Amino acid sequence: MSPVLVWAVGVAQVLLGLAMACACFRILRGPRAQDRVVAFDSLYVNAMLLLLVFGIGSGSALYFEAALIIALLGFVSTVALAKFLLRGEVIE
Amino acid sequence: MNDAAQISSLSANVVAILLIIGATFTLVGSFGLIRLRNFYQRVHAPTLGTTLGTACIALASMIYFSAASGRMAVHELLIVLFVTTTTPISLMVLVRAAALRDRALEETTSEAPGEGQ
Image (cartoon, rainbow over all chains, first blue to last red; front, side, top):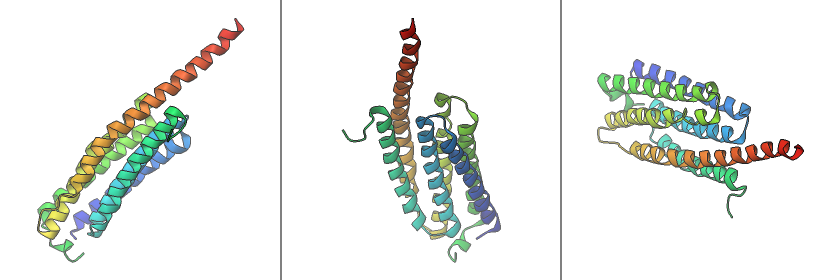
């Protein structure tokens, strides 16, 4: 792999890790439940992007499938949490 | 790693630039979660990462795997399509829930002094 790509993958991993730290801060700090849910939404998107960057860094296509599963399950869990905030129950 | 060594320097540079741009957009969006004050302002911030960040990094991944394997590899389009479709849905449901909760909170707090009068 070319050195510029190794460097870019490392920098992108650091930036995405910082982004996940920002989201974690808001999850821990968030004054109300909806703030935590928004931060959780952004956290799983950042984790999915980090997995895509890992896939580029290691050159294997396996990470793509993990990222797709994170995207699918993250959407379902965010909607379930929002439904819980809306009605007090997930399945009525 | 052995097929990764074969990609040309032009596509490596393009992949590197797209990775840095996408990661920077995502970091700025997540930093907005800390920086903005109100929930209704805060809900806008992470969409920067889910649109531009995801698009740039998925495009970088597509270019990288197309150049490494020598054929078109566009399966990252699935992630882009899915994320850009589902983020507005989940955030709209969430904002509706938050508005309902705020209204309920407002009613209970405005009722409390009203009882005393």
